[in-house]
Structure formats: structure tokens, C-alpha cells
Image (cartoon, rainbow, N blue to C red; front, side, top):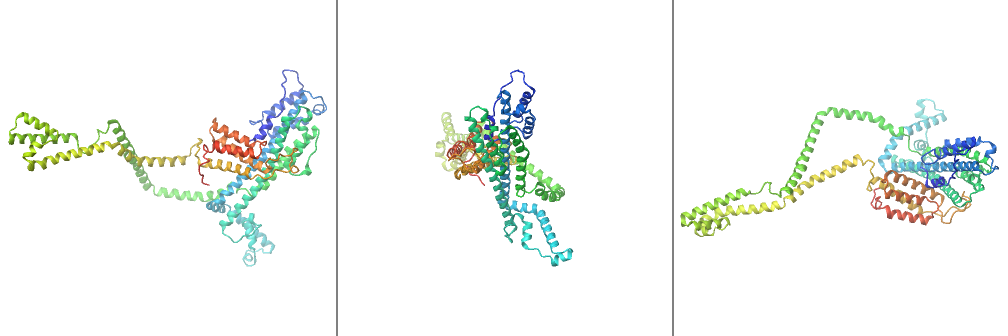
Length: 597
């Protein structure tokens, strides 16, 4: 992924005029084909190494009359200069991408060792995974010592062989051989080994990041020259030997190999050597330096699973097969339990709530029914009227008035005559009915509340189980601000960027800077600038893969990252950009929430 610096430089590549249908020579047509190939070789407009080498080969085979700089500055010369400038930009871009990828690789390996060191289970797994290799190294060391002591029989090995403890320690823990800390627990030794690998990888990352920072400053100087230069051939980039010298100095790190060049043939040779010698040697040297501190190979980490996995799988399968009847019964019981929970504790209570809302609570069961209360009242009315007719000989008008009073609950006329005999058995029954009617109204008024209270526990269980299932299945490609892992990564990166800016030391002295221009007094050191680009690359990849597409959040976030990557901004300005990111995106990305580390 090209950095913002390389994208900007590529945008400054010269533009060539179209032929407009005029007659062109065969060589001009070939140069135009090279130019089109350089501009269309990849999606990022960055030519590949093979395309650059092909273009260099075509230019090297060009006739001297065409490739010499003494000829008039015509359209052919302009096309040639544009191709050479594009070639120089292409070489610079590949150097930058190589250093960036190497820094990211070293940082990823260091992060892997850090995770192993923090987890005791991870340390023990790593020890088991690498135990065969350690034993092989120990066996080779013992065999070498036996040869030195002229021990050639198996019996003499136990009687005469003397292996120093230091040699045993160095064979088992080669990365700790320079500091003998034996004896200690295996867990402590593994942690120390992980910490040592982490420190070595950080040094490699810092070295590559510092080279990347120097390249960034070199590109910033070239950019300023393109923005302020006059459009004359003497100001063409490929004719500047200082730029090529600084480029080689940064990648090779050896001033004795600096190449002084001023003509076109030397420039082509230098660019060809950069791509065929300097870049491959640098990549090979990096792989050699990092190989000893990388995580164990895939098969080394996988052999315990391959070795112990099949027997464990066979034992588990046999146990399941032998208990298949009980497992089947358990599954059926579990199915019925889930079905009963769903029907009796979710569906039915929800149905009752909906029915209560629809009917107003009049269709369900009651403490005492209206029909029962009405029957009791009619029975009481008949008994009282019969009593009044037999004892008092009341007229029809008086009986109608008594009947009306009874419907209203007034039994005073009868109770005055037969208070002791009739009060308790009849009035008590009516009072109980009226009391139950009051209780029934109270329960009816709270029936909806009782329904929600009854269904709340089952809905809570469903919510918890559903959330657990969603966490197991993941959330697909959808981005959530509350995603713990992504929030942790982005929070760690923005914190590291702010820490780099706060802890930035003094800038590189002009005598140590490979740039032809003196650095600004507020310019970041090369190491800080390189580490800043590494962190910004991680954040850019996070934004492009996780933030919602075509959203203001993503566009604004990427704009802030581009501002931070801009080398023309000083430390204070970049710190203000970081503060703006905290204010603008902190809430959306969950940076204000606590993250378990």
C-alpha cells in the first residue's frame, strides 16, 4: 500500500503531450508505449519492478542520438525526461514500500511474542511446540562434546561424559546464551526468551522505521523542489546525482558505495543496480536478521495438534458412540424442555397480554363470576319477599319497594323483625360476594402489569442466550462502534501516535541528514517519522476495512490520517490533529470506553 508521501510524489510526475495524429518515429512510438505501460501497470499507479526493468532495458538499447542530453529539447526529449522521472519515482516508491512492509513485519512478530509472554497457557504451549527442536539441539551438542572427549561408545557416555550446565542451557535456550540465568523455572525461562525476541524485533523495526523516515524527508524535499522549480531541463530530477546518492545511502547505509553520476547512461546504470542488486541484497539482509527471532514455523506450532488430535478425536468419538442412547434421550429431553419453555413461558404469557389489551380484561377467569353474584342476589330477594309475605302480610306496593331496597343491598325492614335469625346466614354470604367482587376488580386493573412481570424473566433469558449466540457466530462484515477487538486496536494505535509526538526528541542534525536541505527546527526525528508512518498505515488499513463505506466518518478519518502523514507539518501541528481526532471520532469509535488489555 503506497503511503501518502509516495502518492503525492507520483502525482507530480510530468505529463506528456499527445501526438495528435502527427507522424512519429518508431523510437518515439516505443517510448510512448513505455510511458503508457509505466502509468497503467497497477491499480495504485505504481509500476512493478518487472515493468521498471523492462523500461530501463528499452532506454539502454536506445540510440545514442536519442538518449544523449546534448540534443535539442523537443517533444522526444520531454517524453524521455518524463519516463526517467517516472522511473526514479518508481524506484523511490519500491524502496519506501519495502521498508514499510519490513517494519510492519517486525512489529507483527514482536506483537506475537508479547501475546505469548503475557499468557501462561501460551508460554506452556510454545514450550511444548518447540520442545523437539530444543532436544535435537541438545543431542547435537552432547554428540559434539562426546567427540571432543574421544567418547565413541554408548556405555562410556554415562561414565565419562561431562557436559557443562552452561552448554545444556545454551542448547535449550539459544537466545539466552549470552546471559546464563540457569536454574530457573521453565515458565520464567520461556517468558525471558519471548521478551528477548521482542526486544530484538523492536530494534529491527526501529532501524527500518528510521530508514523509512529518512526516505520520507528525502521525498518531502523533492516535493518542495517540484512545487517551486522552474520548468527547465537542468532541474529534472533524474539529472540530480545528489538525490540518487542519498537514496542509495539510506538503503545501503554505506557511504563508500555512493555513486556520483551526471549523465543519462550512469543514471540508467544506477537505477538498474538499485533494482537488481541493492534492493534484493537489502531484502535478503533483512530476512537474515529477522529469521532467528520470528515465530516458530507453522508445522512446529501445529505438530501437537496433528500428533495428539487424532487419538483424542477417536476417544471422544468412541465415548459418544458408546453413550449414544443416553445422549439421544438427553437431546430429546433438552428439545422438550426448550419447547416447553418457549410455549409455556413465552408464547402463552405474551398471548395472554395481547388478549388482555384487546378485550380490556373481561374475558379471562374471575375470582367470582357475575352470574354467581346475580344468582345469590335473586335468591336473597326471594327469601326476603317470602318472609315478608308470610310474617307481615305486606301489600304488593310494599313488596315492590322492599324488592328495590334488596337489589340495592338494604335489608333494614326485614332485619328489624328477625335480626338474630336472618342477619348472619344471608348477609354474610352477600358481603363475601361483594368483597370478592372488589378483589376481582383490583386484580383486573393490574392484570396487564402481572402479565408483563410474569413474562419478563423468560424474555431476559432469551435476550442473554441470543446475545451469546450472536457473539459466537460473529457479526460478519458489519462494523460496530462497540466492537471490543477493533476498538482496542484503534485505541492502541492512536495512543501510540500521541505518545510518539509527545516523546519526540530533537530533530536530526543537518550533518547527519541525507537530505540536501537542512531540516526544520521543528521537524520530527527520522525514527519518530518512520514509526508514525507505520502506525498510520495500520490505522488506514483499519479504516478502509472496518469503517462504513461512503460515510462521513470514514472520509473524515482518512483525511486526518493524511494530515498526520504530511511531512510538512511540525510536531505541534500534528499533535493538534491528534487532539482533533480524539474530539471528532473518540465517541464514534469507542475510544472513551474502557478496554480490557
